[in-house]
Length: 331
Image 1 (cartoon, rainbow, N blue to C red):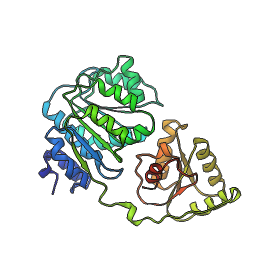
Image 2: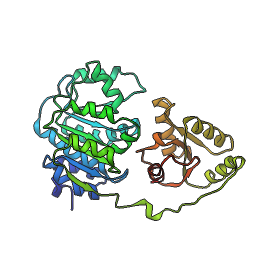
Image 3: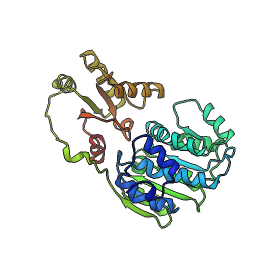
Image 4: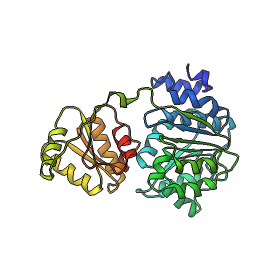
């Protein structure tokens, strides 16, 4: 099965091929025929399952087909994601596709000045990729009007629920036209997600597909019982091993303190949590990706939806609050 057979226009399939992407993942193969047909789609797939292209391809193709100009303050497509990192990653995947179709994009999230975001909206952009908080803020200020949105995508809906974003998401989605196409992707489909599905999706095609390269099969789990004073020496020992390590802490303060202790002990580490500026988050992730830092110390929220290859070890320095968090951290 290739992308063309699933309905992907050759111009877009070509861009994927240039990046070495020629075989659709299970979730792409399952959802693309329905999403290209204009149906509402509910897809279950975890990070790394390829769901980003599952919604970007039909979204770009639909906007390209209708050939409308970008309108001031009125985007034609909206993608919402829970974290700044995820918004950035989706945008990076979207840019080559959007460029090929002559579509403009803007990312909208907090933690940075709103100037460039409002300027772009005023000029007119086709596709908005946003965290709900800042988007609602800009809508309230009159910079964004969702009445012309043709496609709405909600990514990592379960994580939106965990972070308490659902009331905002509901208010935002209420402002998008009922007859538009809506796609919702989530790693888990629980009661909170069900509320969104019932309210916003019309007769959705539901597809469940996890990553074909399911990482869980090849994972070994160990539990270490330690006294308080053994904690840091054992963490230094574990993170000194070859390969990349991600260490999870419960609090932002804990992440900062532990990264400092590991660095003092000679383990090159960076921290990732909500207290950092966007620049610092980007810089730290780049250092970890490049291998300048071998250990990433992160809180749950900061690490949701980020994708780093070749992590050899995940350490839960503080136990996760609930079982889903254990799965997301480890996966």
